[in-house]
Image 1 (cartoon, helix red, strand yellow):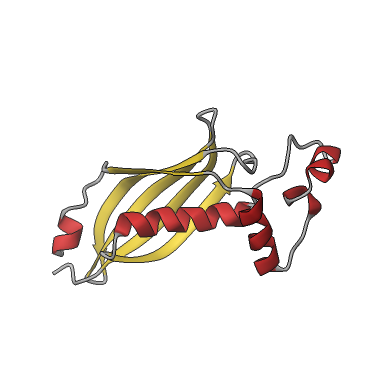
Image 2 (cartoon, helix red, strand yellow):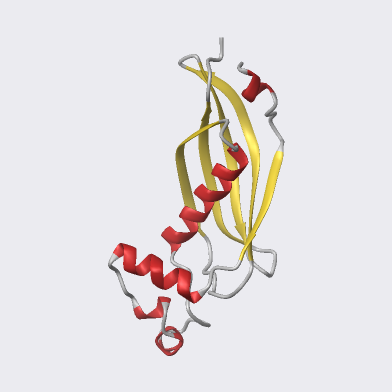
Length: 142
């Protein structure tokens, strides 16, 4: 394995990355996607649909998972894949924590890689998103 991969071991944990997605961030995300479901930015519309407040879009939370993994990588490699399963909504203006754990370190095609388990944890300590990532480290695994 390369020097970067050697320092990563199965069971290593990283994070938390603590964030408070706010309404402005959600509106910017909606604008970039050119999608404007009112329950993302209008509290009355969200409550009319039975939600407790405006929501953080799921794909935005996936982007935050990418950010957490990228920060953890710290220039040692690149992200090959991120997947996520959304368990419960997160409200704008509420703190979330993104945590991760190295599930597996291996080489594929001569390149050192790691599989990561990820989670977005809400203020109540419950996972709102369970995620998985594959990263590849720079260098060869020879």
